[in-house]
Amino acid sequence: MATGLTPSEALVHRLSTSSFLRLWTHPNPVGKGGKELCDCLVICGPHVIIFSVKEIEYRDTGDETGWDRWQKAAIDKSVQQIWGAERWLRVSDRVVRNDGREIMLPPRAERQFHRVTVSLGGRGQVPLKWGDFGHGFVHLLDEQSLEATFSELTTVTDFVRYLCAAEDIFERGVRPVFMGGGAEDLLALYVQNGSDFGLTDPATRQPALAVITEGIWATTIKHADYLARNRDLESSYAWDRLIEYYANDLLTNGMIDMFRNEVTQNELALVAMALQPRGHRANLADAFLEFLQPDNARVAARLVVADNETAFVFTTGDSADRKHRSRELFLRCLVVRGRCKGVKTVVGIATDRPTAGKRGHSSDIVYLHMPIWDPAEDEKVRGIQADLGYFKDTKWPT
Image (cartoon, rainbow, N blue to C red; front, side, top):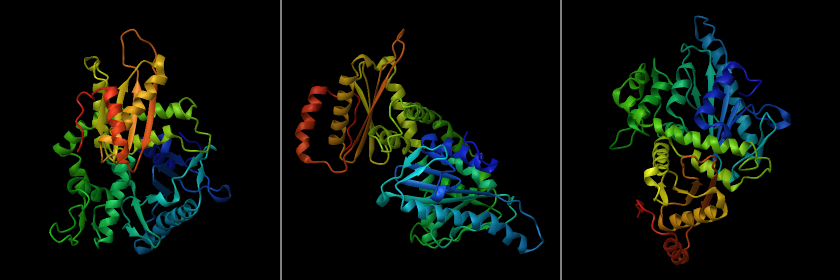
């Protein structure tokens, strides 16, 4: 765990690392003049998530004076920190972690900023602000909603899609009124109804009355369907462990050198893996583990078309000839890009097939990003596919 964190900052860091994984989670990064930029920064693909954490004990004065004092200290100051961090990040190319490692920011034109204030200490006794505070939408989490949010939205993509959905209904005029409920109950409506939260009229898309009552989240997480869904997603965490395995190699100068101040192709491959939402991770983990089973030893490769216009190719080969294995993996990725017209990014993973008595193994990763496909390449792809053989059990998307 990062040192120098307050207990509340350490909690947010722990939750963020669990959801967003350690390669993309940066506690207390350094900003202008060597000062702390924000309490936690998450950078993954185009997404830049800025967290500010304030823990202020609420003192009940018997009137609105106590509310105003707490909001100024716990929310308003947090929002100011977020805006200051965003201004600096918009004109910078890299950010320095508190351990000195430099992180490259995504291209300026692609950056998508997401603002989250974690305001603790109100104990559910203070009416919470929600929405645009003057310089963009800021999402507010308190004691009740913090762990609920991170227990449900356990990937970068799942997290930012929820934030964007909340912003969208706000822009369409929905103003939730929290009658005893909180942000965790709004999250429950998202889980139940999807991106419109059930707060717009399906026919007219006009805002419906949005009264958020207490206990919606508590009821949702006990429902049989919710529990069954979570059981179905348990296998997806094998994909998280695979990412962390490669990230460990990256951070220890094994597979990739992270200190060259440039984004490598292998790092982009890990980003593509991390941008897969939880449901797709379950499909990917199941396919990868099944592919490595002894019963599938004669299957040369496995293709999985996933989210974000991304496909994954799994293949095996002896690490004694990694040059040949890497070349074949790249060619298979090229075939997939040519055949799957809705795919723009292909990530290939090659590893040794588990064999009784064999010790040690190695992995190769290929990252292929081709936003535009040249039809002239089709003939080349058909030739490569003929040389490599047929992808057994592959269903090619149209």
